Image 1: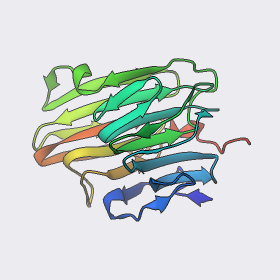
Image 2 (image 1 turned 90 degrees about the vertical axis):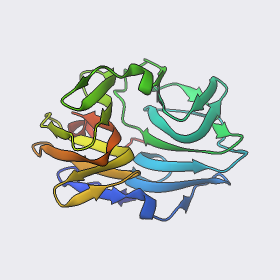
Image 3 (image 1 turned 60 degrees about the horizontal axis):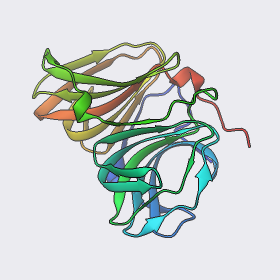
Length: 222
């Protein structure tokens, strides 16, 4: 399966308008944003766990990162409430689920194969001071990518021309980029060479951002 697999193209997906697609595990559904592969895939998705649902134990061959959007995600390592950013690197394993239900934004098979750094962070707790109407938290940095959390005041401008492309997920509020108005759940991917020229809406905006990573996009080897 290929979905939004041309990384030279600008893509906008308003995930709140997309259908939920059942996964192989009962009670776990997905809204797919991009994908290369079938059940083993390089994938970016919104995943919803119904109360009491879970996946069977598994190992992440090439890593997993996710944000908890609502509810509490759980595995044998702990509970992860909304606003938590998690990186589970290649060779890590767990048995995920949600007793009370949750929704996460998750990226699979997109790590440096040699990465072994595992962590969780409360995104809001990492925020720095406000500069030009924007507070920023750097969640992760390596030779391939930079992952950030941003909180923008109403009307604040967000510009970025980082090499290697960019992804944004709007978490709260709204953001305009060109002719597109992005609301919670909207996902924007900009290819290498196309700059972000965005503006926060009247209620401000909270967003997750990743830059620099698109040149490393490959299909999983199975």
